[in-house]
Image (cartoon, rainbow, N blue to C red; front, side):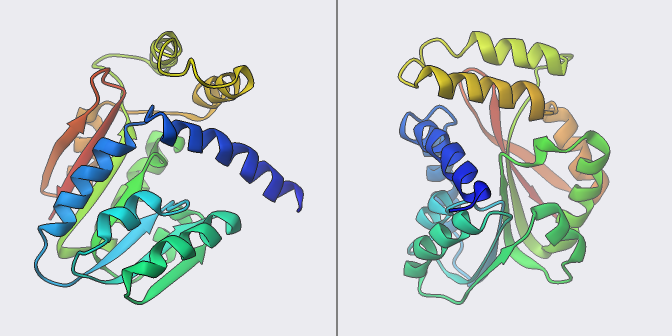
Amino acid sequence: MGNAVHAFFSQWDIYRLCIEHNTLFHREVGEILRREMQARSEPFTFLDLACGDADLTASALRGSAVRAYTGVDFSAPALALAAEGVAALGCPRTLHETDFAGFLRDNNGTFGVVYLGLSLHHLDTAAKRETMRHLRRATAADGTFYLFEPILHGGESREGYVARWAAAMDGPYDPFPADAREALLEHVAESERPESPEDYLALAREAGFHHGEVLFTDPGSFYSLFRFSA
């Protein structure tokens, strides 16, 4: 395996630990998405941005009226796992090896449901604003966009968020090896640029989403799931 593949599986092991111990609240988010997808009686297309292995979304879509699935991720190993995960959906499937922001810039199609999880916060505010406009364009007129992201408290700085996140590691992350905890904290400190829920809602309104709401926030107020529609 090349260096990129080795790096992917090293990071993937840490990510799977987060899934196993539910430190990122995928169980709660997955259950909400499952209920939302099952409630859609008309066939719909689904765009899964930064899909990773698509485990969360594939589980939410099983038994739904999804008629076509599109997954986007920059990692070939992740897409290989996603291909296996979404095969059971029994609908046409398309996978794109590219970053989600680039895909959205180049995309001319629209989708009934769009999902983006734990990825938009890697962009600065200006890039978030531009990407949100592309997300609105990719969401059909009668469609829905779901966004799952880390959040700032009101008036909280990025540095304050990192300090709060680090202080909350004791307990939930105790089962993780020391090097995994260190890698996670380094990632949060160097790569995460959260916004407040109010800022995410404002960015969505500015982009043309007329309806926005928070469907879920974890007990520690670190992550929120949003639903936006035209």
